[in-house]
Image (cartoon, rainbow, N blue to C red; front, side, top):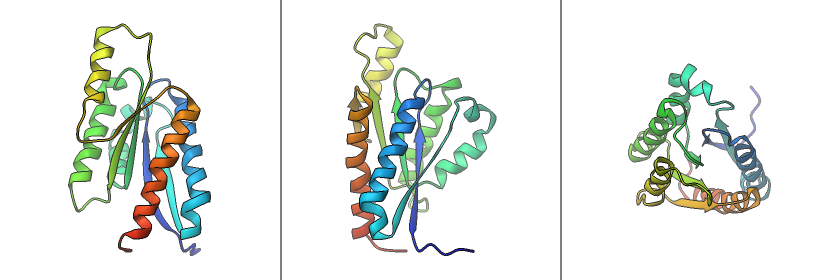
Length: 168
């Protein structure tokens, strides 16, 4: 086995619906933070997550295991909880893991895509529910660049916390 010497921390990316571009933006922001801050400190943030919404239905147990094995959870939303509300279940699982000292989960964050023309009451209620959460940081964004900038700040703070915290 090749020894790389990096302290690796999984970052679960959760983004239901047509948010493929935002998932790629997350990966790019994490890569940027890895290159500029994490790797010089021998740390690596490792993004994991679904490529297609259908995977959460077909491989729910495996998805849940990946959430449980992650140190950080990034939830990106636009207008719903995805198929069968399963992304809601994974979001709550991440919160449960964060509360469990036996789990590696350190932080859960939400990024909510702007929807200025949205008028559907159920979607507006969904968005309001997220915006009012007190137990997780909720960030709003309207462009990919805005998302990337905010993610770089969040992920950079994670790296600095890892560096200043106790090492396993």
